[in-house]
Structures are given as C-alpha cells and as structure tokens.
Length: 121
Image 1 (cartoon, rainbow, N blue to C red):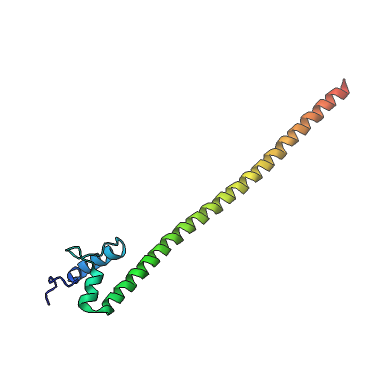
Image 2 (tube, rainbow, N blue to C red):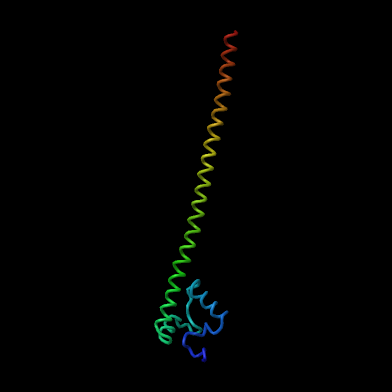
C-alpha cells in the first residue's frame, strides 16, 4: 500500500517515524501530517472511528498521565522542602534556647560576682 497518498499514515511508515510522530502528538501537541492537516481527522475519515478513538484515548491518557506525574514531582519536592525548612526552624529554636540559657547563666554569674564584691566592701 502506498503511504504517501495523504491518508494520515505518512508518519507511521516505519518504527522510527511512528515513534517520532507519537512523540510530537503526545508531548509537543503538534499532531499534523506533512501538509499541516490534523492526523486525528485524517485517521477518522480514512480508517474509521476505531483508530480515531484509540488515538484520542492515547492522547487523553498521555495528557493527564504526564500532567499528573509532573504535578506529583513538584508536590513531592515542595513537601520535602517544607519538611527541611521545618526541621531547620526547629533546630534554630533549640539553638536559640540553649544560647539564651548560656547567656542567662553568664548574667547570673556576673550578678552574683558583683553582689559578692559589694558585700565584701
């Protein structure tokens, strides 16, 4: 069969061109043949609605599937960053408390030294 007769199958004549055509359709959203006609409409009119339905199902699956994977990766990174930030803030609060306790101990020691010096005089 001659695949160059404009029936929408030109992009599927061999495996590499089929993969490239599917990549363009699912990722790049440029699903046209060499003449700029939509492959979906050509497949539906030339080969029946079964092929068009399969094509549409793959498009919908890839769109939602790819979108969900990207969103899941983004949400996971945001949650990991928030967890790291929460741990950092907790560590900072603990450091502040120990620093405060150290400075208060120094202050009490200075006050006691001054009090002791005043009682000796």
